[in-house]
Length: 167
Length: 153
Image (cartoon, rainbow over all chains, first blue to last red; front, side, top):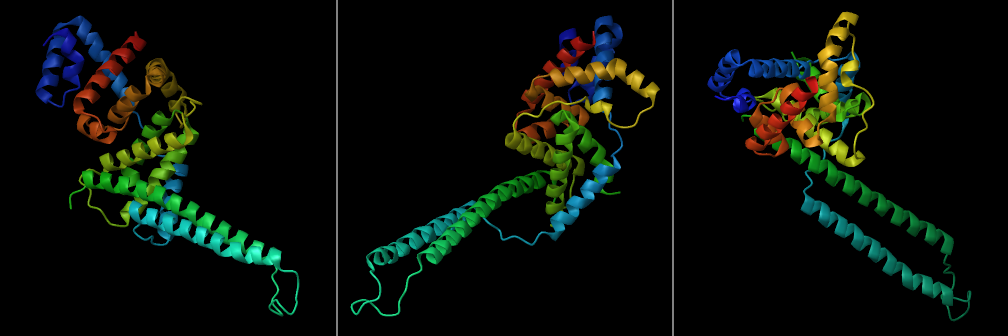
């Protein structure tokens, strides 16, 4: 054991190495001072104040939030991608379907013997309907993105759980 | 004794030191609680509940930081809580210096120090939580202790 190895030895998980470092420090004033400083640093960093009641309450609140959430489907990134693609297809479909009806409307000159009698096209309500549909799809996409993010977190927690648990 | 009763104080101390300010730390603490409760639904049998809890806390801190960017240090975390004037004075002598020196450490080194000394995670657990090798953790601890020691001189 020499002075340069003191800190490394003290941080070792090997009790024998730690003991050797302490024995060395007992005979070396410089290392003794280093060891005393390290002990103070460790003691300061290890100080835990009692858990404040507000934090305890926050912990309990979190349990209610978690429990009250409905059980979610087991989304996978692939499933989320498929759902996003499906939503995009619906948007395209709605757009394509809406095109001919609008062009018919622009050519429609009012009821006549040639046109279909009694069929009227309300452009404003149609536009409102399509806007609502697009907004709904947009909302679904945002929800899917949030869900995917949440799944990432849950997967990470599950991995951590695997590391620390015995089944 | 529940998980939070046993290790909640350590978790809070850990996230306060990591975040550098109590407001963000409280958010990270709550986020950790939500993650823990969600995984509790499956009733896991934990061999090392403290390590598990603190690792989740650390990951919640990382996610929070990546969403919000760098946390701003508003106050010395050790200033919070109820202490007698004598305790505060005694702590101010060494503790103030140590806390200030820890806050000045580069982020990657500070995280190792906080997980190992404040959280009490072993070198191996710290390495796993941070996805580092044990050798890297040891060398960072070594560098940190040298800097902290020089701050105390």
